[in-house]
Length: 110
View (cartoon, rainbow, N blue to C red):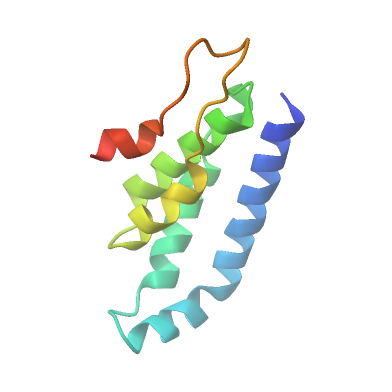
């Protein structure tokens, strides 16, 4: 497993801890303008993402792409689609990849 994938896993765990700790606070803030479930939804999405086997990926970009898809699939409302792009990164070019990349996650949604 690369250092980049290790960093993604560490970031994901810390995000999960923060959403667990602040879910009620986020729900309360969401009640002012929405339906009051933002913290609950984000916690659910990060729980799903944390259950992924990211260690199977050789590159951080691949792990982040999988995390983004888990968020889109498991976070309700607009939160999933609005948080997932932060996880979707373009594929690098060079010896590992033969063609210039496109934002596959965005292309798939279009």
